Image (cartoon, one colour):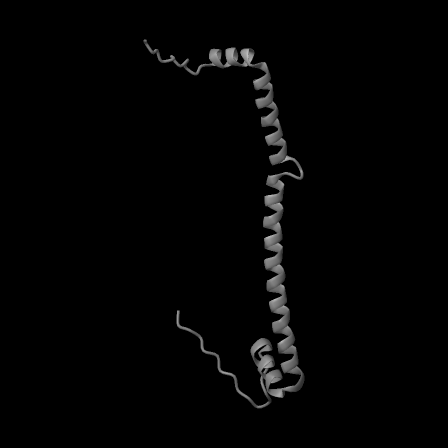
Length: 112
């Protein structure tokens, strides 16, 4: 008994066209599956859009967290300024460059 191995046809456009003609049903199924894949990936409610929206949501949540932290810091600063004259003086000096009466200000100029 002799066994022969099958000779595989090389992949070339003619072979592909011949296979498509021979297997019309399978080719139609593959084409439909490919189109369905493209639709699922790239339509308005597809996977690509979902990933983009998730990234935007993550960025928005980070911005909200930063804004909440800043708001909390400003509330604490506001409470400190309400009842503490030293805190008011510190802000006036640092932020607005104010000085007391009869106080001399010395500026140090760096050498060039």
